[in-house]
Length: 494
Image (cartoon, rainbow, N blue to C red; front, side):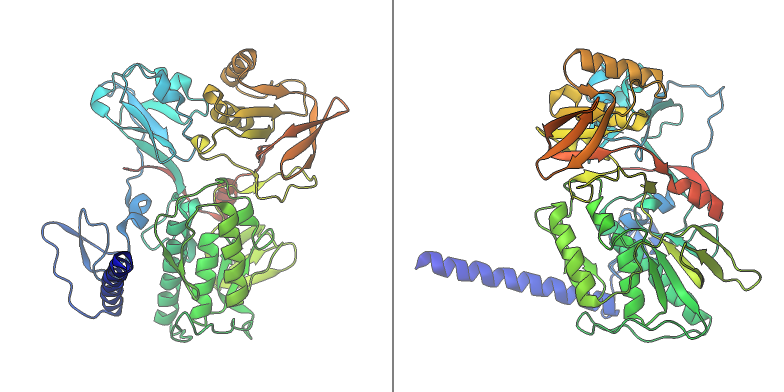
């Protein structure tokens, strides 16, 4: 009985605190209650323009997390002159680093470098002596030496705090903008669309007020004049969030996805991901996947799409984006049609258009086309398909220290097109028995717990947990450049 009463008291206290928190958030978002002015230096919130403390994490006015704009506010890297003095320091490109830890092991000054959040970082600059061992050990070339004393660099499109590029009316949200977290991508997609809505209203284009989560407004029909208010390219976390926000406001939107509806999630490069707290998905409500499994997210994704009836045109890849004459509109060309739109939100992700194997089982959730975090794999049977630098670097990363059973399968008989350093490291790992290399090999079929390979015309079956396909494809950076978007390198603090 005492346990029962203790449970009731604890449950009641929990409800009290949760309800108080939700009431506070509701008042904050509605503009009710004047938030106290922050002490000390402030900066304006990019969403509502209210002052936020320089070290503040959230805006007290609208509740927006300031971390959303870390990349956008970061300074553009400048070239360092050859005559600059001082010892070199590691400069780590976070978009290339896969967190294998080779640089940490190679550094003689223990504690200078660490792997945090799946990426290497200069944890203690005072310990760095500029030995350059870390740069030599990095298998991906993500770590270079710089005199600029930069902890991490990102190669990203130039985007302002409203997620707009140097091409007016063209926005970028999600992983392509430099932040790979699912929560961040969802927030960016919604905020980018909100900015589009404000721009439409300023131009005298008013649709309707937003409905609540239970309203589920019908998707707006195609515009009579054939001009869409916004085109959303990609139906991943950022793209779906932007599309749902457009539907919520009755904005004429066009969402194009180059694959199937859930392709983005199925090919998500992490088999586990971090979602430590819920995030609000427009027209759906609080989104939270407790176990962090890709399969759980896939199930929720399909539920959101079914319940909201969001309109997504699948298997329609955008081939080009250009201005349509002097109208100020964009013309989006796909293999099926050319669409005219006022604004564009690119939610492509960083993977671009990967080349596929074209074999049975390739749509299984365990197949991915990019490796982001090598340390996320432990005691697994992993097949990597490919023969270039990316495939070799991935094999070296996930096979480091023998923590996984890794097989590298390549259809050729040598790796001459890879960098010499990668060839040498691959040969060394193969000689040490830490990595299995199969040459003249084709992947024939991918099954739930194994893969079937053809090795010199003989069938070989291997136990398998994950398949990483790295056989090339079109980089999204090439597409952005053709569209006129400027690409820069930024120094981003942790």
